[in-house]
Length: 139
Image 1 (spheres, rainbow, N blue to C red):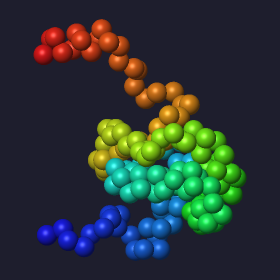
Image 2 (image 1 turned 180 degrees about the vertical axis):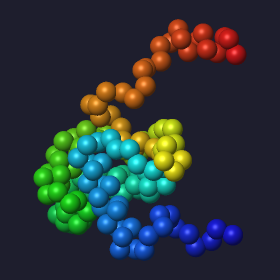
Image 3 (image 1 turned 90 degrees about the vertical axis):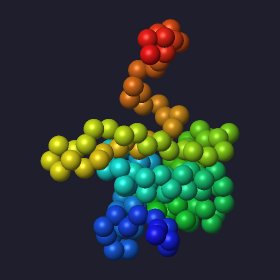
Image 4 (image 1 turned 120 degrees about the vertical axis):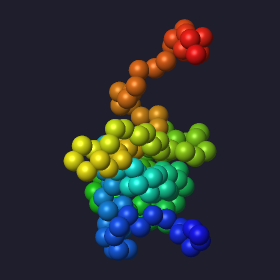
């Protein structure tokens, strides 16, 4: 049975897991797209969404909570500035996890976690309406 498992432990004790997630959260806010293993990306979704939600709250309590999670201090102003404005109208789902091919050395499942609505180049070319219709017609 799977009772009592609230989150993935990622093969670490609680202190190392917390440090890992803080480092991943800092990298996600800084670069807006990172490549990591699939279990880490899935665990990071919750933290990334929480950081954006704190930025949207804008209270002093939310700011102090964000200070506890971010390793680099200028990123807190990014959360409460540009990211807050970008996601003001979005109700949730601020992060996206995309699977990529497995890592060569140990065949670990890899994923890209990114903030949605970012200004980075897209990972895939956008589908045109004509090409999607041709794909469905050939099937």
